Amino acid sequence: MERITRTDLRKVHGFSTAAALSPTPTREWTAAEWDRIRLGHHARGMDERWTAFTEDNRLFLHRSWTGHQIYEADFAPAAGPGGGFVIASARVETDARRHRRVSDAYDAAMLECLIASVLLGERADALRGRLAELRGAPAGAAPAGAGTVGAGMR
Image (cartoon, helix red, strand yellow):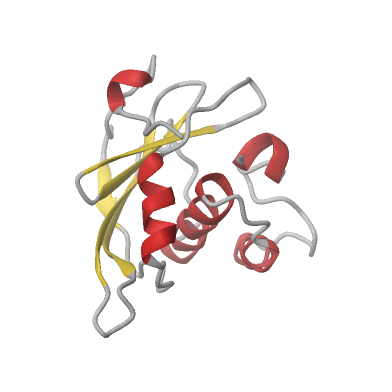
């Protein structure tokens, strides 16, 4: 697979206004998962809602239709012998015209869910359930703006 870069994407707009995301996802990604994350993702159709690319150790997640940046995450080597990577810091779009915020906890879970489902191809059912809880939706409801694995997140 070829690595996606900023120049591969038609529409890429930076944050309008952004804020630090706290807490950040606590998952530790393996070196192999980090290698896959670094490849990025280019939406291949109208049903795919996200594009992603990395520059150095920074991941950028943009809405595919508008090109608006919604998330940015800085990865760093995890402490310990595992050789994995963690999110050291993250930012989220705060302009309500670009991104409907629920809470920092929701955005942290959404960021992790997008990485797991869009970039790693995981089902991420537990994260989807957590997103529904944080949004106050009935169990089994899709996260706002996320869609299904095949349509919105992948």
